[in-house]
Image (tube, rainbow, N blue to C red; front, side):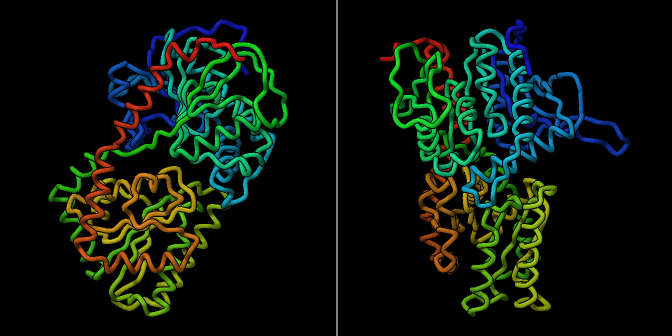
Length: 500
């Protein structure tokens, strides 16, 4: 742990992003030489122009255990590593982040595990990220911390560098208090997040859940999107009911929704290329040119509802309401956290179900499900989106689900039908999708049939509305709006106000 009494040297960067992973991936060439390539993620795309404008720094882990290297510049971004050991990854990342917080924040679809040594590792790693950020940040810099792995960093950073303006964005859901309250370290997480000046969430409901946790655990006053955080915390260390009345000064923290999006224009541009369109036609031909191609694209995660869509599809085939010769479901299941027991069990369950359906309803010329347990490059994914008549997003709980937005962005032909879970954050915006409750298997089955027979005029009207929403609210708009609110707090957030 850092001795906060020691002076912290200031850095030279006016804008700093902090995330678990760096925006670059280490690439090993055939001859054994190592190099770095930019990560393809939407967050990197959104922040790259801002980073270049401010000559910013990005703090994160290099992607491999015990990998240590000096900071370097990559395409106008200063890359600053925080090394993690194999022990850190086992306890902080695979343990507390992904076997405690992830299931808890996703409605305990899978039971969370609570280990005190995991929590201690989470504190230790968060402190190292805070220390590295404090050392890189210039006086008065703007710092943007990303996601659930680093929820303690805002408070730690504020204690080290009260001159900084600190933002935090939570990319996953924030659970209702009845679920969140299970966490043994619930108050410490809330206190960690309240170190920020602006806390962003995907949905209005997530921000409301967080504010309720603040009221229940800390007793602080909340007004609209604002939370009054006392400069001297006199709240008890146990749950409280109702605001604590005290004299003194407070700082105002903003907690509100900023729904994330994608680089929609780049997806559409790729979809318009002749090579990708030719590949889309080839995919349909390789599948035997069925009348309908349905598509699911997910990380292999228990939150994605893959089993629910397979159950619905299998029952439609069993009932004779769909013919396996006419309909193919392409399921792309990207490998995820393969060393975690729950994910290994999920893979076995999904692949057993796929095998059973294909065995029961497949023919020599055709299989009902084309299953792929690996990822694809973006060009291939865009071709799949163009080839698919129906996109199935059946998440049981999802912060946003960018796949839904990618499908819409690619459909410049104004065709295709999006079936979207109401438990995905994207459903707040994409209201012209066919919204479903994935737990309602009968309802899901009827919606699949509705999508397959939907007239072209109706498909086009829905897709036009969806595309307008996605193209207007792209990832650049998301980052611009968050940073606008954050930078407006640069002076206001650190000022004391009298608390009556």
